Image 1 (tube, protein in one colour):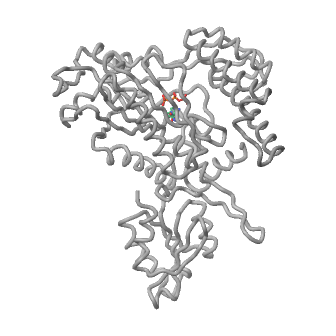
Image 2: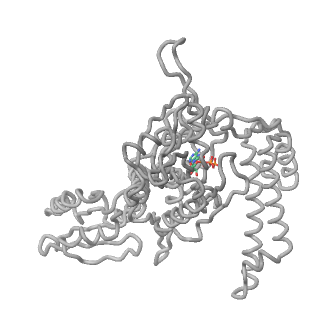
Amino acid sequence: QEDQFKKVISHAKEYGFIFQSSEIYDGLSAVYDYGQNGTELKKNIRNYWWKAMVQLNDNIVGIDAAIFMHPTTWKASGHVDAFNDPLIDNKDSKKRYRADVLIEDHVAKIEGKIEKEVKKAAKRFGEAFDKQQFLETNPRVVKYQEDAQAILKRMGKSLEEENLADVKALIEELEITCPVSGSRNWTDVKQFNLMFGTQIGASADSSTQVYLRPETAQGIFVNFLNVQKTGRMKIPFGIAQTGKAFRNEIVARQFIFRQREFEQMEMQFFVQPGSQKKWYEEWKEKRMLWHLSLGMGEDNYRFHDHEKLAHYADAAADIEFRFPFGFKELEGIHSRTDFDLSSHEEYSGKKLQYFDPESKESYVPYVVETSIGLDRMFLAVFSNSLQEEELEEGNSRTVLRLPAVLAPFKVAILPLLKRDGLPELAKEIVDDLKWDMAVTYDEKDAVGRRYRRQDANGTPFCITVDHQSLEDKTVTIRHRDSMKQERVALSDIKAIILQEVAV
Ligand code: ATP
Protein backbone atom coordinates (compact mmCIF):
# COMPACT_ATOMS: atom_id res chain seq x y z
CA GLN A 1 0.00 0.00 0.00
CA GLU A 2 2.77 2.39 0.93
CA ASP A 3 4.57 1.52 -2.29
CA GLN A 4 1.44 2.19 -4.31
CA PHE A 5 1.13 5.61 -2.65
CA LYS A 6 4.74 6.46 -3.45
CA LYS A 7 4.09 5.50 -7.07
CA VAL A 8 1.05 7.77 -7.15
CA ILE A 9 3.09 10.74 -5.92
CA SER A 10 5.98 10.19 -8.31
CA HIS A 11 3.71 9.52 -11.29
CA ALA A 12 1.78 12.72 -10.53
CA LYS A 13 5.02 14.64 -10.71
CA GLU A 14 6.64 12.84 -13.63
CA TYR A 15 3.64 13.32 -15.90
CA GLY A 16 2.85 16.94 -15.07
CA PHE A 17 -0.12 16.43 -12.78
CA ILE A 18 1.08 17.76 -9.43
CA PHE A 19 4.23 19.56 -8.30
CA GLN A 20 5.34 20.59 -4.85
CA SER A 21 4.68 24.31 -4.47
CA SER A 22 7.78 26.51 -4.83
CA GLU A 23 9.86 23.42 -5.45
CA ILE A 24 13.01 25.36 -6.39
CA TYR A 25 12.99 26.73 -2.83
CA ASP A 26 12.54 23.20 -1.45
CA GLY A 27 8.79 23.46 -1.35
CA LEU A 28 6.18 24.73 1.06
CA SER A 29 4.69 22.17 3.36
CA ALA A 30 1.18 20.90 2.46
CA VAL A 31 0.86 23.24 -0.53
CA TYR A 32 0.86 21.93 -4.11
CA ASP A 33 0.70 23.21 -7.67
CA TYR A 34 -1.21 21.50 -10.45
CA GLY A 35 0.69 21.03 -13.69
CA GLN A 36 -0.48 20.96 -17.29
CA ASN A 37 -2.24 17.59 -17.03
CA GLY A 38 -3.37 17.99 -13.43
CA THR A 39 -5.09 21.28 -14.18
CA GLU A 40 -7.13 19.63 -16.93
CA LEU A 41 -8.08 16.67 -14.74
CA LYS A 42 -9.02 18.94 -11.86
CA LYS A 43 -11.11 21.16 -14.13
CA ASN A 44 -12.88 18.11 -15.54
CA ILE A 45 -13.73 16.83 -12.04
CA ARG A 46 -15.04 20.28 -11.11
CA ASN A 47 -17.14 20.42 -14.29
CA TYR A 48 -18.47 16.90 -13.74
CA TRP A 49 -19.63 17.98 -10.27
CA TRP A 50 -21.03 21.29 -11.51
CA LYS A 51 -22.97 19.62 -14.25
CA ALA A 52 -24.51 17.06 -11.88
CA MET A 53 -25.36 19.64 -9.24
CA VAL A 54 -26.26 22.83 -11.12
CA GLN A 55 -26.95 22.01 -14.74
CA LEU A 56 -29.04 18.91 -14.11
CA ASN A 57 -31.07 20.34 -11.23
CA ASP A 58 -33.43 23.13 -12.12
CA ASN A 59 -33.66 24.17 -8.46
CA ILE A 60 -29.92 24.56 -7.85
CA VAL A 61 -27.96 27.64 -8.91
CA GLY A 62 -24.31 28.50 -8.55
CA ILE A 63 -22.42 31.46 -7.11
CA ASP A 64 -18.81 32.53 -6.73
CA ALA A 65 -18.29 34.39 -3.46
CA ALA A 66 -15.09 36.16 -2.41
CA ILE A 67 -12.44 34.46 -0.31
CA PHE A 68 -12.33 37.42 2.07
CA MET A 69 -15.46 37.96 4.11
CA HIS A 70 -16.48 40.36 6.85
CA PRO A 71 -14.72 39.14 10.00
CA THR A 72 -17.99 38.86 11.92
CA THR A 73 -18.95 36.06 9.52
CA TRP A 74 -16.50 33.81 11.32
CA LYS A 75 -17.78 34.80 14.75
CA ALA A 76 -21.30 33.90 13.65
CA SER A 77 -20.25 30.63 12.02
CA GLY A 78 -18.43 29.55 15.17
CA HIS A 79 -15.03 29.35 13.49
CA VAL A 80 -13.32 32.01 15.63
CA ASP A 81 -14.24 30.23 18.84
CA ALA A 82 -14.39 26.63 17.84
CA PHE A 83 -12.59 25.82 14.59
CA ASN A 84 -9.85 24.08 16.47
CA ASP A 85 -7.99 20.84 16.23
CA PRO A 86 -6.43 19.20 19.28
CA LEU A 87 -2.65 19.34 19.04
CA ILE A 88 -0.11 17.24 20.90
CA ASP A 89 3.69 17.34 20.76
CA ASN A 90 6.06 14.55 21.49
CA LYS A 91 8.90 15.74 23.65
CA ASP A 92 11.43 13.15 22.50
CA SER A 93 10.93 13.12 18.76
CA LYS A 94 9.86 16.80 18.67
CA LYS A 95 7.13 15.71 16.30
CA ARG A 96 3.76 17.40 16.31
CA TYR A 97 0.53 15.47 15.93
CA ARG A 98 -3.16 16.16 15.60
CA ALA A 99 -4.39 14.20 18.57
CA ASP A 100 -7.58 12.88 16.99
CA VAL A 101 -5.78 11.83 13.80
CA LEU A 102 -3.14 10.04 15.85
CA ILE A 103 -5.89 8.14 17.65
CA GLU A 104 -7.58 7.35 14.33
CA ASP A 105 -4.25 5.95 13.13
CA HIS A 106 -4.34 3.56 16.06
CA VAL A 107 -7.81 2.51 15.03
CA ALA A 108 -6.65 2.06 11.43
CA LYS A 109 -3.92 -0.20 12.70
CA ILE A 110 -6.51 -2.33 14.46
CA GLU A 111 -8.59 -2.38 11.27
CA GLY A 112 -5.49 -3.55 9.44
CA LYS A 113 -5.26 -6.46 11.85
CA ILE A 114 -8.88 -7.33 11.16
CA GLU A 115 -8.25 -7.29 7.41
CA LYS A 116 -5.27 -9.58 7.86
CA GLU A 117 -7.37 -12.07 9.83
CA VAL A 118 -10.06 -11.95 7.15
CA LYS A 119 -7.55 -12.63 4.39
CA LYS A 120 -6.02 -15.51 6.34
CA ALA A 121 -9.40 -17.09 6.98
CA ALA A 122 -10.53 -16.55 3.38
CA LYS A 123 -7.47 -18.46 2.20
CA ARG A 124 -8.05 -21.26 4.71
CA PHE A 125 -11.77 -21.75 4.05
CA GLY A 126 -11.76 -21.05 0.32
CA GLU A 127 -15.19 -20.93 -1.31
CA ALA A 128 -16.98 -21.76 1.92
CA PHE A 129 -15.77 -18.50 3.53
CA ASP A 130 -18.53 -16.24 4.76
CA LYS A 131 -16.94 -12.88 5.58
CA GLN A 132 -19.91 -11.45 7.44
CA GLN A 133 -20.23 -14.51 9.62
CA PHE A 134 -16.52 -14.50 10.30
CA LEU A 135 -16.60 -10.83 11.36
CA GLU A 136 -19.48 -11.54 13.70
CA THR A 137 -18.21 -14.75 15.29
CA ASN A 138 -14.42 -14.96 15.31
CA PRO A 139 -13.52 -14.07 18.91
CA ARG A 140 -10.28 -12.29 18.06
CA VAL A 141 -11.86 -10.20 15.32
CA VAL A 142 -14.87 -9.37 17.46
CA LYS A 143 -12.50 -8.19 20.18
CA TYR A 144 -10.58 -5.99 17.71
CA GLN A 145 -13.80 -4.41 16.51
CA GLU A 146 -14.92 -3.75 20.06
CA ASP A 147 -11.56 -2.18 20.87
CA ALA A 148 -11.74 0.08 17.83
CA GLN A 149 -15.26 1.20 18.65
CA ALA A 150 -14.43 1.79 22.30
CA ILE A 151 -11.44 3.96 21.34
CA LEU A 152 -13.45 6.09 18.91
CA LYS A 153 -16.28 6.46 21.38
CA ARG A 154 -13.97 7.54 24.17
CA MET A 155 -12.20 9.98 21.87
CA GLY A 156 -15.51 11.44 20.69
CA LYS A 157 -16.77 11.91 24.21
CA SER A 158 -13.53 13.45 25.48
CA LEU A 159 -13.34 15.90 22.60
CA GLU A 160 -16.97 16.84 22.96
CA GLU A 161 -16.55 17.51 26.65
CA GLU A 162 -13.25 19.31 25.98
CA ASN A 163 -11.64 16.80 28.29
CA LEU A 164 -8.19 17.19 26.77
CA ALA A 165 -6.46 15.43 29.64
CA ASP A 166 -8.32 12.27 28.75
CA VAL A 167 -7.35 12.62 25.09
CA LYS A 168 -3.74 12.64 26.22
CA ALA A 169 -4.33 9.67 28.55
CA LEU A 170 -5.90 7.74 25.68
CA ILE A 171 -2.90 8.39 23.43
CA GLU A 172 -0.52 7.30 26.19
CA GLU A 173 -2.42 4.07 26.71
CA LEU A 174 -2.59 3.30 23.00
CA GLU A 175 1.09 3.94 22.46
CA ILE A 176 1.79 1.23 25.03
CA THR A 177 -0.69 -1.38 23.81
CA CYS A 178 -0.38 -0.79 20.08
CA PRO A 179 2.38 1.73 19.21
CA VAL A 180 1.96 3.92 16.17
CA SER A 181 4.40 6.77 16.71
CA GLY A 182 6.80 4.76 18.87
CA SER A 183 6.97 7.66 21.31
CA ARG A 184 5.98 7.86 24.97
CA ASN A 185 6.74 11.34 26.24
CA TRP A 186 3.85 13.68 25.44
CA THR A 187 2.95 17.27 26.18
CA ASP A 188 -0.59 18.19 27.17
CA VAL A 189 -3.18 18.44 24.41
CA LYS A 190 -3.95 22.03 23.31
CA GLN A 191 -6.61 23.45 21.02
CA PHE A 192 -5.23 25.09 17.87
CA ASN A 193 -7.31 27.39 15.63
CA LEU A 194 -6.97 26.50 11.97
CA MET A 195 -7.89 29.84 10.38
CA PHE A 196 -5.26 31.92 8.59
CA GLY A 197 -5.54 35.58 9.55
CA THR A 198 -4.31 38.60 7.64
CA GLN A 199 -4.81 42.37 7.48
CA ILE A 200 -6.97 44.25 5.04
CA GLY A 201 -6.37 47.97 4.50
CA ALA A 202 -3.14 49.93 4.16
CA SER A 203 -2.51 51.83 7.37
CA ALA A 204 -1.81 50.13 10.66
CA ASP A 205 -4.59 51.82 12.66
CA SER A 206 -7.33 51.51 10.05
CA SER A 207 -6.59 47.95 9.05
CA THR A 208 -8.91 45.15 9.97
CA GLN A 209 -8.13 41.59 10.85
CA VAL A 210 -9.67 39.28 8.26
CA TYR A 211 -9.39 35.57 7.59
CA LEU A 212 -8.84 33.45 4.54
CA ARG A 213 -12.07 31.46 4.42
CA PRO A 214 -11.70 27.98 5.92
CA GLU A 215 -14.76 26.76 4.01
CA THR A 216 -16.82 28.05 1.10
CA ALA A 217 -20.19 27.44 2.78
CA GLN A 218 -20.41 30.78 4.58
CA GLY A 219 -20.30 32.69 1.29
CA ILE A 220 -23.48 30.84 0.39
CA PHE A 221 -25.25 31.50 3.70
CA VAL A 222 -24.63 35.24 3.66
CA ASN A 223 -25.95 35.40 0.08
CA PHE A 224 -28.97 33.25 0.75
CA LEU A 225 -31.55 36.03 0.45
CA ASN A 226 -29.79 37.77 -2.46
CA VAL A 227 -30.00 34.61 -4.52
CA GLN A 228 -33.46 33.60 -3.32
CA LYS A 229 -34.97 36.98 -4.17
CA THR A 230 -33.17 37.77 -7.43
CA GLY A 231 -33.53 34.20 -8.69
CA ARG A 232 -37.13 33.93 -7.44
CA MET A 233 -36.14 30.64 -5.91
CA LYS A 234 -38.79 28.54 -4.18
CA ILE A 235 -37.93 26.26 -1.30
CA PRO A 236 -36.62 23.58 -1.60
CA PHE A 237 -33.68 24.95 -3.57
CA GLY A 238 -29.91 24.81 -3.50
CA ILE A 239 -26.90 27.07 -4.00
CA ALA A 240 -23.66 25.53 -5.20
CA GLN A 241 -20.14 26.87 -5.20
CA THR A 242 -16.61 25.73 -5.89
CA GLY A 243 -13.55 27.59 -4.66
CA LYS A 244 -10.45 27.80 -2.55
CA ALA A 245 -10.46 27.28 1.20
CA PHE A 246 -7.55 27.58 3.62
CA ARG A 247 -6.75 25.73 6.82
CA ASN A 248 -3.59 25.85 8.85
CA GLU A 249 -3.57 22.07 9.25
CA ILE A 250 -1.43 20.87 12.13
CA VAL A 251 0.13 17.97 10.34
CA ALA A 252 0.97 18.11 6.68
CA ARG A 253 0.97 14.67 5.19
CA GLN A 254 -0.65 12.33 2.72
CA PHE A 255 0.11 14.49 -0.28
CA ILE A 256 -2.95 16.44 -1.52
CA PHE A 257 -5.29 14.66 0.91
CA ARG A 258 -4.69 17.27 3.58
CA GLN A 259 -3.46 20.61 2.32
CA ARG A 260 -3.27 24.10 3.74
CA GLU A 261 -4.77 25.56 0.56
CA PHE A 262 -7.36 23.44 -1.19
CA GLU A 263 -10.57 23.62 -3.16
CA GLN A 264 -14.05 22.68 -2.04
CA MET A 265 -17.20 21.93 -3.98
CA GLU A 266 -20.15 22.62 -1.74
CA MET A 267 -23.90 22.78 -2.10
CA GLN A 268 -26.31 24.10 0.50
CA PHE A 269 -29.87 22.91 0.04
CA PHE A 270 -32.51 25.04 1.77
CA VAL A 271 -35.57 23.16 2.97
CA GLN A 272 -38.65 23.56 5.09
CA PRO A 273 -38.00 22.83 8.79
CA GLY A 274 -39.18 19.31 9.52
CA SER A 275 -38.35 18.00 6.04
CA GLN A 276 -34.59 17.90 6.56
CA LYS A 277 -34.40 14.18 7.34
CA LYS A 278 -35.95 13.29 3.99
CA TRP A 279 -33.62 15.61 2.08
CA TYR A 280 -30.63 14.43 4.03
CA GLU A 281 -31.35 10.83 3.02
CA GLU A 282 -31.99 11.88 -0.55
CA TRP A 283 -28.72 13.79 -0.85
CA LYS A 284 -26.77 10.96 0.73
CA GLU A 285 -28.09 8.65 -1.93
CA LYS A 286 -27.65 11.11 -4.81
CA ARG A 287 -24.09 11.89 -3.91
CA MET A 288 -23.18 8.22 -3.67
CA LEU A 289 -24.74 7.66 -7.11
CA TRP A 290 -22.61 10.50 -8.47
CA HIS A 291 -19.49 8.75 -7.24
CA LEU A 292 -20.59 5.38 -8.56
CA SER A 293 -21.37 6.89 -11.98
CA LEU A 294 -17.62 7.22 -12.52
CA GLY A 295 -17.28 3.45 -12.46
CA MET A 296 -14.41 3.30 -9.98
CA GLY A 297 -15.79 0.27 -8.12
CA GLU A 298 -18.57 0.04 -5.55
CA ASP A 299 -16.26 -1.67 -3.07
CA ASN A 300 -14.13 1.44 -2.85
CA TYR A 301 -16.83 3.52 -1.17
CA ARG A 302 -18.61 3.31 2.13
CA PHE A 303 -20.77 5.54 4.30
CA HIS A 304 -19.67 6.47 7.75
CA ASP A 305 -22.62 7.75 9.75
CA HIS A 306 -21.52 10.07 12.53
CA GLU A 307 -22.62 9.18 16.01
CA LYS A 308 -21.03 12.24 17.48
CA LEU A 309 -22.54 15.32 15.87
CA ALA A 310 -21.29 18.88 15.70
CA HIS A 311 -23.44 21.20 17.77
CA TYR A 312 -25.19 22.57 14.66
CA ALA A 313 -26.03 19.24 13.02
CA ASP A 314 -28.90 16.83 13.49
CA ALA A 315 -27.44 14.20 11.17
CA ALA A 316 -24.12 13.76 9.39
CA ALA A 317 -22.36 11.16 7.29
CA ASP A 318 -19.15 10.88 5.34
CA ILE A 319 -18.64 9.14 2.06
CA GLU A 320 -15.35 7.39 2.57
CA PHE A 321 -13.09 6.21 -0.22
CA ARG A 322 -10.44 3.54 -0.22
CA PHE A 323 -7.31 5.69 -0.63
CA PRO A 324 -3.88 4.01 -0.89
CA PHE A 325 -3.62 4.55 2.89
CA GLY A 326 -7.04 3.11 3.73
CA PHE A 327 -10.65 4.27 3.88
CA LYS A 328 -10.85 8.02 4.58
CA GLU A 329 -13.36 10.84 4.29
CA LEU A 330 -13.88 12.12 0.78
CA GLU A 331 -17.17 13.97 1.16
CA GLY A 332 -19.46 15.04 3.96
CA ILE A 333 -23.25 15.26 3.94
CA HIS A 334 -24.59 17.27 6.84
CA SER A 335 -28.02 18.24 8.04
CA ARG A 336 -27.12 21.62 9.58
CA THR A 337 -30.56 22.67 10.84
CA ASP A 338 -31.09 26.47 10.85
CA PHE A 339 -27.89 27.03 12.79
CA ASP A 340 -26.00 29.07 10.20
CA LEU A 341 -28.80 31.31 8.96
CA SER A 342 -30.11 31.96 12.49
CA SER A 343 -26.66 32.78 13.72
CA HIS A 344 -26.07 35.22 10.83
CA GLU A 345 -29.44 36.80 11.62
CA GLU A 346 -28.37 37.29 15.18
CA TYR A 347 -24.93 38.75 14.40
CA SER A 348 -25.97 40.91 11.44
CA GLY A 349 -29.32 42.06 12.75
CA LYS A 350 -30.78 41.30 9.29
CA LYS A 351 -33.63 38.91 8.70
CA LEU A 352 -32.65 35.85 6.67
CA GLN A 353 -36.09 34.35 6.27
CA TYR A 354 -38.05 32.82 3.49
CA PHE A 355 -41.62 33.88 2.85
CA ASP A 356 -43.65 30.85 1.88
CA PRO A 357 -46.19 32.05 -0.71
CA GLU A 358 -48.54 29.16 0.03
CA SER A 359 -48.72 29.17 3.82
CA LYS A 360 -48.08 32.96 3.88
CA GLU A 361 -45.60 32.40 6.68
CA SER A 362 -41.95 33.33 7.03
CA TYR A 363 -39.33 31.02 8.43
CA VAL A 364 -35.58 30.42 8.62
CA PRO A 365 -34.96 27.45 6.33
CA TYR A 366 -33.09 24.33 7.37
CA VAL A 367 -30.01 23.35 5.42
CA VAL A 368 -28.73 20.06 4.09
CA GLU A 369 -25.18 20.39 2.83
CA THR A 370 -22.96 18.30 0.60
CA SER A 371 -19.28 19.15 0.81
CA ILE A 372 -16.49 17.51 -1.12
CA GLY A 373 -12.81 18.37 -1.46
CA LEU A 374 -11.82 18.72 -5.11
CA ASP A 375 -8.22 17.80 -4.38
CA ARG A 376 -9.29 14.76 -2.38
CA MET A 377 -11.50 13.71 -5.25
CA PHE A 378 -8.51 14.19 -7.55
CA LEU A 379 -6.45 11.91 -5.33
CA ALA A 380 -9.23 9.31 -5.25
CA VAL A 381 -9.55 9.27 -9.04
CA PHE A 382 -5.83 9.42 -9.70
CA SER A 383 -4.72 6.78 -7.20
CA ASN A 384 -7.51 4.43 -8.20
CA SER A 385 -6.68 4.76 -11.89
CA LEU A 386 -2.93 4.20 -11.72
CA GLN A 387 -2.14 0.63 -12.61
CA GLU A 388 0.88 -1.42 -13.45
CA GLU A 389 -0.21 -4.00 -15.98
CA GLU A 390 1.54 -7.22 -16.98
CA LEU A 391 1.53 -7.77 -20.72
CA GLU A 392 2.57 -10.68 -22.90
CA GLU A 393 6.20 -11.74 -23.22
CA GLY A 394 7.18 -10.37 -19.83
CA ASN A 395 6.38 -6.79 -20.79
CA SER A 396 4.47 -4.40 -18.59
CA ARG A 397 2.95 -0.97 -18.94
CA THR A 398 1.90 1.85 -16.63
CA VAL A 399 -1.62 2.92 -17.44
CA LEU A 400 -3.76 5.62 -15.89
CA ARG A 401 -7.26 4.26 -16.37
CA LEU A 402 -9.03 7.55 -15.69
CA PRO A 403 -12.76 7.63 -16.34
CA ALA A 404 -12.75 8.89 -19.95
CA VAL A 405 -14.97 11.83 -19.08
CA LEU A 406 -12.29 13.13 -16.67
CA ALA A 407 -9.17 12.46 -18.74
CA PRO A 408 -7.04 15.60 -19.36
CA PHE A 409 -6.89 14.82 -23.08
CA LYS A 410 -9.51 12.73 -24.79
CA VAL A 411 -7.43 11.84 -27.81
CA ALA A 412 -3.83 12.02 -29.02
CA ILE A 413 -3.18 12.42 -32.71
CA LEU A 414 0.00 10.66 -33.82
CA PRO A 415 1.50 10.77 -37.33
CA LEU A 416 3.30 7.48 -37.88
CA LEU A 417 6.27 9.27 -39.45
CA LYS A 418 7.47 12.88 -39.44
CA ARG A 419 7.32 13.12 -43.25
CA ASP A 420 5.36 12.35 -46.41
CA GLY A 421 2.55 14.71 -45.45
CA LEU A 422 1.54 12.66 -42.40
CA PRO A 423 2.09 15.47 -39.84
CA GLU A 424 0.05 17.81 -42.04
CA LEU A 425 -2.95 15.47 -42.13
CA ALA A 426 -2.56 14.78 -38.39
CA LYS A 427 -2.65 18.52 -37.68
CA GLU A 428 -5.74 18.91 -39.82
CA ILE A 429 -7.41 16.30 -37.61
CA VAL A 430 -6.29 18.20 -34.49
CA ASP A 431 -7.79 21.40 -35.88
CA ASP A 432 -11.05 19.66 -36.63
CA LEU A 433 -11.41 17.95 -33.23
CA LYS A 434 -10.14 20.67 -30.92
CA TRP A 435 -13.43 22.57 -30.99
CA ASP A 436 -15.20 19.62 -29.40
CA MET A 437 -12.66 18.04 -27.07
CA ALA A 438 -9.19 18.37 -25.56
CA VAL A 439 -6.74 17.03 -28.13
CA THR A 440 -3.00 16.53 -27.93
CA TYR A 441 -0.48 15.98 -30.72
CA ASP A 442 2.72 13.95 -30.52
CA GLU A 443 5.20 13.15 -33.27
CA LYS A 444 8.30 12.30 -31.21
CA ASP A 445 9.69 8.72 -30.84
CA ALA A 446 8.40 5.41 -32.12
CA VAL A 447 4.65 5.06 -32.08
CA GLY A 448 4.77 2.32 -29.43
CA ARG A 449 6.50 4.68 -27.01
CA ARG A 450 4.00 7.38 -27.80
CA TYR A 451 1.17 4.97 -26.94
CA ARG A 452 2.82 4.25 -23.58
CA ARG A 453 3.18 7.95 -22.91
CA GLN A 454 -0.52 8.50 -23.56
CA ASP A 455 -1.39 5.47 -21.38
CA ALA A 456 0.54 7.10 -18.55
CA ASN A 457 -1.29 10.39 -19.11
CA GLY A 458 -4.65 8.63 -19.11
CA THR A 459 -5.60 9.55 -22.69
CA PRO A 460 -8.41 7.13 -23.63
CA PHE A 461 -7.83 7.20 -27.42
CA CYS A 462 -4.93 7.50 -29.84
CA ILE A 463 -5.40 8.14 -33.54
CA THR A 464 -2.53 7.11 -35.77
CA VAL A 465 -2.20 8.62 -39.22
CA ASP A 466 -0.25 6.52 -41.77
CA HIS A 467 0.27 6.35 -45.53
CA GLN A 468 -2.99 4.52 -46.08
CA SER A 469 -4.75 7.47 -44.40
CA LEU A 470 -3.60 9.71 -47.25
CA GLU A 471 -5.14 7.36 -49.78
CA ASP A 472 -8.43 6.24 -48.29
CA LYS A 473 -9.13 8.69 -45.44
CA THR A 474 -9.03 6.03 -42.74
CA VAL A 475 -6.97 6.02 -39.53
CA THR A 476 -6.14 3.61 -36.73
CA ILE A 477 -7.90 4.22 -33.44
CA ARG A 478 -6.33 2.65 -30.38
CA HIS A 479 -8.19 2.16 -27.12
CA ARG A 480 -6.22 2.80 -23.93
CA ASP A 481 -7.79 0.12 -21.76
CA SER A 482 -7.97 -2.82 -24.16
CA MET A 483 -5.05 -1.67 -26.35
CA LYS A 484 -7.23 -2.82 -29.26
CA GLN A 485 -6.68 -1.08 -32.58
CA GLU A 486 -9.15 -0.73 -35.40
CA ARG A 487 -9.28 0.95 -38.76
CA VAL A 488 -12.02 3.58 -38.98
CA ALA A 489 -13.08 6.28 -41.41
CA LEU A 490 -11.71 9.70 -40.56
CA SER A 491 -15.22 11.09 -40.76
CA ASP A 492 -16.36 8.76 -37.94
CA ILE A 493 -13.74 9.47 -35.29
CA LYS A 494 -15.39 12.48 -33.71
CA ALA A 495 -18.60 10.58 -33.05
CA ILE A 496 -16.78 7.48 -31.78
CA ILE A 497 -14.78 9.50 -29.26
CA LEU A 498 -17.57 11.81 -28.16
CA GLN A 499 -19.76 8.83 -27.39
CA GLU A 500 -17.24 7.75 -24.75
CA VAL A 501 -16.02 11.04 -23.35
CA ALA A 502 -18.96 13.44 -23.38
CA VAL A 503 -20.00 14.60 -19.91
P1 ATP B 1 -10.97 16.11 8.05
O1 ATP B 1 -11.71 15.49 9.20
O2 ATP B 1 -10.36 15.12 7.11
O3 ATP B 1 -10.03 17.20 8.45
P2 ATP B 1 -13.25 17.77 7.81
O4 ATP B 1 -14.28 16.88 8.39
O5 ATP B 1 -12.67 18.85 8.62
O6 ATP B 1 -12.07 16.87 7.19
P3 ATP B 1 -15.05 19.32 6.25
O7 ATP B 1 -14.87 20.53 7.07
O8 ATP B 1 -16.31 18.54 6.38
O9 ATP B 1 -13.79 18.34 6.45
O10 ATP B 1 -14.77 19.70 4.74
C1 ATP B 1 -15.45 19.10 3.65
C2 ATP B 1 -14.51 18.43 2.69
O11 ATP B 1 -13.42 19.27 2.35
C3 ATP B 1 -13.87 17.17 3.22
O12 ATP B 1 -14.70 16.05 3.05
C4 ATP B 1 -12.62 17.06 2.39
O13 ATP B 1 -12.89 16.40 1.15
C5 ATP B 1 -12.26 18.50 2.10
N1 ATP B 1 -11.15 18.94 2.96
C6 ATP B 1 -11.22 19.35 4.24
N2 ATP B 1 -10.02 19.72 4.70
C7 ATP B 1 -9.15 19.52 3.68
C8 ATP B 1 -7.74 19.71 3.52
N3 ATP B 1 -7.00 20.20 4.51
N4 ATP B 1 -7.19 19.41 2.33
C9 ATP B 1 -7.92 18.94 1.31
N5 ATP B 1 -9.25 18.73 1.40
C10 ATP B 1 -9.86 19.01 2.56
